Image: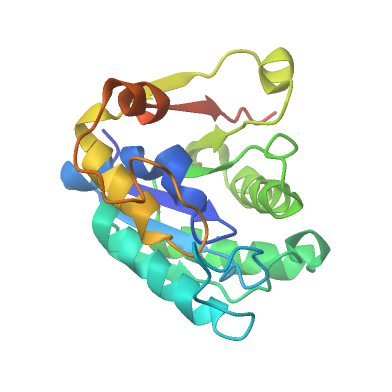
Length: 218
């Protein structure tokens, strides 16, 4: 199992649904797990259920929620890269690559997890994944970490084939649900956000598997 893992996503909460079980698994194994988050999600539409934040206070709430999520998962190395939410596709690619590349050089990951460019629905997701792929693709072939990507756009399996990795994260559902619960300004998930302690079969089936595509460089 890899001993140094880096997740790179654009928003607080991007880690929760698709990869928090995997990150918790690595953290529990003793791996060094780092998370580079590009923005604070300050342009998010949701303000809590019922609302408790506003446009001015939301960034602070989202930063604290992200920190709480990382503690729940076991991520000890959180990097905030300081970009603006909903602008990643418009950022200077050189600046974007430079900041992500600096984290990659510092962490020296054996595995990087991000979004699959073009198959992650949100423009920030796609732009983040594309930048990660550019950075890793420029590295010497023998020094590149494995890149696992999350894809969920309509037709992604038609274009990409079946995922390369299906990971059973049921042993880490407590950490995963604590991560989801941490982002209370952004979503309410019955059975999780309401503090339910019982992990039902329905919740296991919905959240117990995480899947990834291995990015293959030319």
